[in-house]
Image (cartoon, rainbow, N blue to C red; front, top):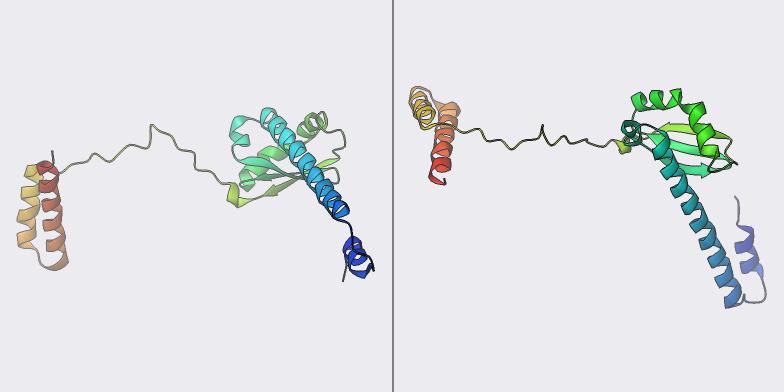
Length: 165
C-alpha cells in the first residue's frame, strides 16, 4: 500500500504545519493543473487545425502523460483514418510541444456526435384529407376490435387538425 510521503510527514510530524505552507502546497498544485490545462487547450486547438474537419468533429486531445499525447476517437473507423495521419500529426504537434514522443490513439464511444443536417430534418406535415378520413371511418365499420378503434382514432385526429386550422 502506497502512502503519500507528504501526507505521512504531516501526520507523523510533532509540530503543526503553518497555514502558509499548506496554502503554498495547494497553490502550487493548482498552478501545475492550470499549466497542464493550458497546454492541453493549445494542443487541442492545434490538433483541430491539423486534421480534416470531419475527423476533428469525432475526436479530441484527451491527455498528455510523460510525452505521450492521448487522442480519443469516436469509433474504429475514425481511428483508422487518424492512424494514416499519425506520423505527420506527431511532427506537427511537436511544433507546439517538442517534448512529445508519441501518440496514443484510443476509441471512446462517448464521443459520438449526431451531425444534424437541417435540410434532412423537416417537421412532419403529413395530413389526412377529409376524403381519407371518410374512407378510414368506412373501413373501421367493416373491421372489429383494436384495428377498428385505431382507424376511428386516426380519422378523428384528421378532423381535429382540420378544425384547428
